[in-house]
Amino acid sequence: MSVVGARPQFVKLAPIATALSDLGHEHVIVHTGQHYDPMLSDVFFRDLGIPEPDAHLGVGSGSHGVQTGSILAQMDEELERFAPDCVLVYGDTNSTLAAAVSAVKLHYPVAHLEAGLRSFNRGMPEEHNRVLTDHAADLCLAPTQVAMEHLASEGLAARSALVGDVMTDVLFTVRDRIGDQQTANPLLPELSPEGYYLATIHRAENTDDPQRLCEVIASLGAADKPVVLLAHPRVRARAASHGVELEQGSVIVRDPLPYPELIAAAIDSAGVVTDSGGLQKEAFLLRVPCTTVRFETEWVETVDLGWNVLANTPDDILAALTRPAPSPTDAAPYGDGHAAQRAVEAIVSRLSI
Ligand code: UD1
Image (cartoon, rainbow, N blue to C red):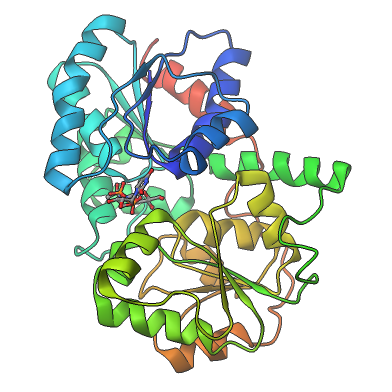
């Protein structure tokens, strides 16, 4: 049983669903409903060929306690209904933590995909979710060697397996499809290739405080090229309630894009500026320079290899956007694009399914 609820989890689910089907396993999908807007949910199932969910909890938005608690309260019934051999949870959202806790309480084996990532920033909701989920899980499926080291230092080495990063699997498939079909960049014709930066800002630490949101948007507005801000509903909602105008200076606001269009837009951009975890890594894999508007990153390899820069003050953000191109590298810290198959094999062998 896969339990998913938020946009990045649907991306991770896609290669897992394929690998489970290829290896002949039965797969039940539970959608918590944490993300419900079609552009944050349905389009991913459609474009990435993911089977329809078998159950939908419809929890919607709410405070951490309400959202997490609502999933917890409804999961007992789904676990009893489907009696899975393993409950697979993904990443670091409230859906991840709630599903992991509900499964361990009812003694269903839990595997955590994308285990071992750490920002060491205990103010982030994602950090609470990932630490607690790793410690609840029977099997921690790590995307990188660094993640394996974090798990080992927390005493979880015996329960951990290095499988690689499943988002890399999806990205390589979609990138090759775009190359074959020469899909038009969805942001063109109004913007020429390398004539714009692609931006996403949605994290609580950048959106919840009015002053912080104001400063980040003003920095993007002062950029030397148009900045296409693909506005997650959270940033739109917070900007409206704080009275912050998103479309200022160089900033052009657009709705979030479906996954293949997002990748096409990133490939054509002069650089990515983001606080998303996934997009930092996608930019690196596409060899597009990335500026990350955060004080730390879980994907430290992108910074160590020179393709990602952490920048927070307006001056630092603007300097990072216009920095010279990083040195080419053929390093592959995120695996070879076959992580999902290894994850399924690890689940079967380590949990004796
Ligand atoms: C969640 C995850 C975050 C992940 C992100 C990916 C948690 C704590 N956070 O953040 O780790 O990076 O998903 O996008 O789980 N909203 C809508 N429509 C939707 C969903 C949300 O309008 O379909 C708006 C609502 O105003 C809601 C706000 O976005 O209150 C925040 O949504 P929420 O699910 O709490 O967290 P995200 O910011 O999406």
